[in-house]
Image (cartoon, rainbow, N blue to C red; front, top):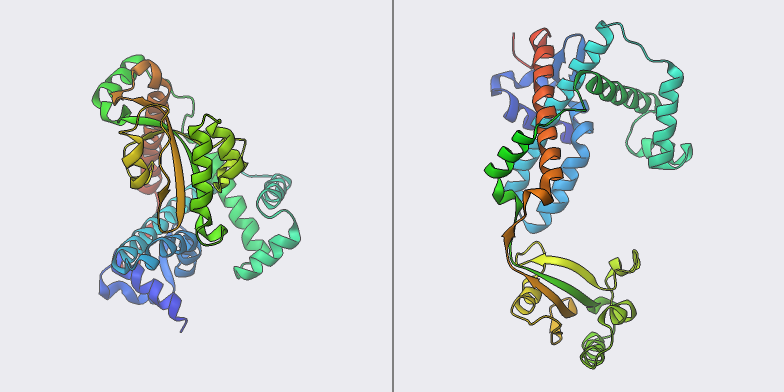
Length: 329
């Protein structure tokens, strides 16, 4: 038996059914939706990328238990998404809709060009995935149908009243709160790119020039190893950063927030890099006014309403469908 497939089946059994119902999963069946069968292999293929991403994020950190919990969630959600897809495809078919094959060809060709570049690269990739061109084309057709049916059944141009916007804003002001912020430019010197001791020497020389009045942004363009500086002349600009882990590492925050506007840090050295930071301004924490975030609030409410309508639609499809999971009558 393929042990990877066996373990996947056991995982699905553990999150979906009782042990007494596991035999059908082990035989390859995950669900039946009307006249369509969803196999364990289907679930494996559908969730493979997400599972591999979770593995890369968690396993090197020794978080095996957390990875297993996330993997089971991915499997459960993946199967649920496949069930919903089959419900929509069944609705498309029974409603008598049809698509010209030339349209599907255009969809497939566009996807090939966008993701793979050419058919040769596509063929090699599909071979590595153990997937045929026919199954790839069917997946693209199914995804296109699901997208079009979703657009047809869920109004995309929803009107959100000003009163709803104001009420949501008042009830969720914490979402629009900004903590204390500092506007920062940074020069980064990675130790792996230089000879031993060289990053500190470079940083000390650059700092002397910055303190003497040279433009910090130009110095960042000249000296920084930050890859982002090559994407449009950011000149070391980190923008406004809040005093929290996700915005700036602690060693840099410890300088940036007590510092005066215009102050340049001493050389800050960590295990892997050397940094210089210039603080260009500070801003006290506050709640962004509604006038500033109205568009974001409206977009959020539209998304919530579309999701509510989508759940209602899927609920109606479920109510008239035959859905069976392993072991159920």
